[in-house]
Image (cartoon, rainbow, N blue to C red; front, side):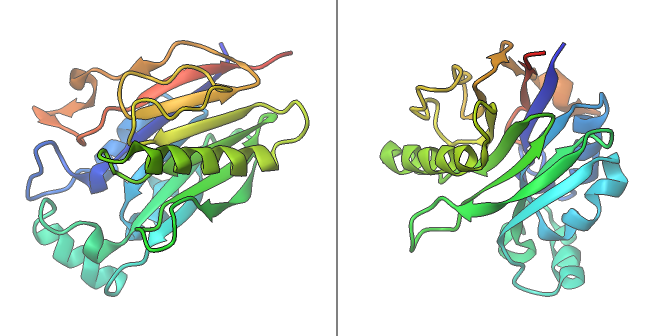
Length: 234
């Protein structure tokens, strides 16, 4: 079957379109309900990092890209007053790699992939099951795709720099571009969220239909989860 690697930009727990209330815990529980091996998340409020393990039982490897403007209780309280209006400006922003509790995993750190002067964008990595997995959230600059492709290239270089000889590498996350330009990796998906594999066989990319991320008529996030299975050599 291989390792199931899933990625989802959680839109800070917002619905699509945004509403007054948030759905962050619902999203995390939905994304982890079928026990994926790896779950890469982007656009998390910083306060949620301490709650992820209790919500889903997975190991958590966080990377904070923007600190909250106020204390966590205050920023969370203000944001909850209207989830659709108050987002990362108050609660900060983070990414996280979640690994199934049965898998041994080691964090390999993070690095900035955005250029100085731009909003900080990070890649972070873990090693598990004989491969390196990286999670990234690249800059949203549709007018200048070279910026985004450069960040994807830096993310790949960081992950590959941690890989042992012949160790596969997986890049997952919100690339904010349909074609990241990484020719050594598997084919990207149809949107801007990808799971790319180098050095191992990759199954077809599966993009969740809207109905799968809908709860009581509410569409969760403005991004669909995407996933594939990595087939490791025996």
